[in-house]
Length: 188
Image (tube, rainbow, N blue to C red; front, side):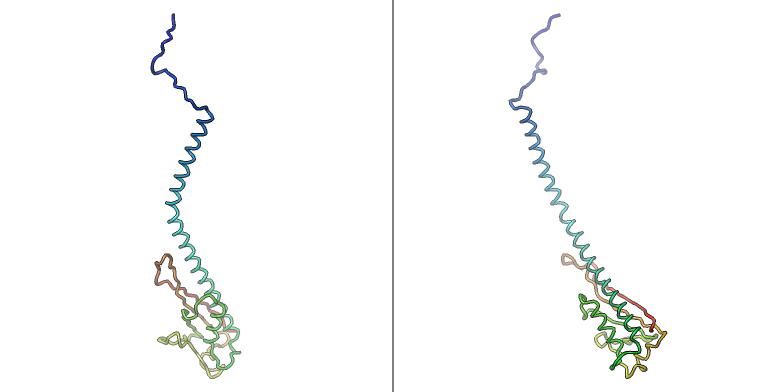
């Protein structure tokens, strides 16, 4: 059997002028450029939703911090009111004590935005229909009026509301959001 030196046209081998190392480097360079471009496109597509989620998380975190501060301030004011019941000095105003304690305990909250409500031994202060700007329950002595309602064994309940703002990127998604903190303490 004789072999022919003629080969079929589809078996012809084409030789490349570049070495194997050059071909590998060229392939790696091409794939890196391709990966860098695709990662840049992925980053550009993922960045806006990521920023929106992060900003919403920050707004929610600020609201939760405000609520925690308000809750702690109301708790402190109720405890102070319950322990200083018979020791109020003239003008015998338990409402003023509550307001000053809450404002001092929550310095980053705006006092003008707070709405106070006090319930001493079943008597609400301010009375229904009274505006918050005139929140006062001055008594003539420790035994009369609001100060007189602070008898040992009764309950003092302090409630404060504060508007929350879940605003981000100019939109307030929850315009009727209100933080409310209520604490009841037994008068000592």
